[in-house]
Image (cartoon, one colour):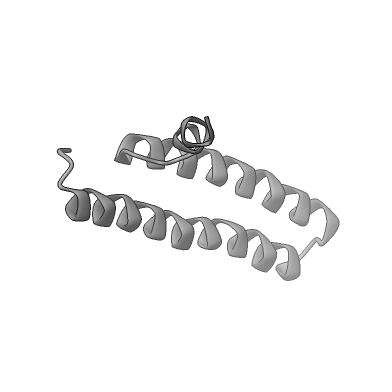
Length: 77
């Protein structure tokens, strides 16, 4: 039973990774917009820019991990 639940939350394909990255990016931009409202000026813009940059870094790690898993286990694309 636990393996079925674990498989439900495992990212298996690049498409799933891209959907997760898209959701993270939407949340990051929304958070950045709140930063712009809270901190007007260059401080808000700096915080706004940090949010999507973090998503870019996490997105790269997600895609690399999906590719690595596919290579290790010999799964087709």
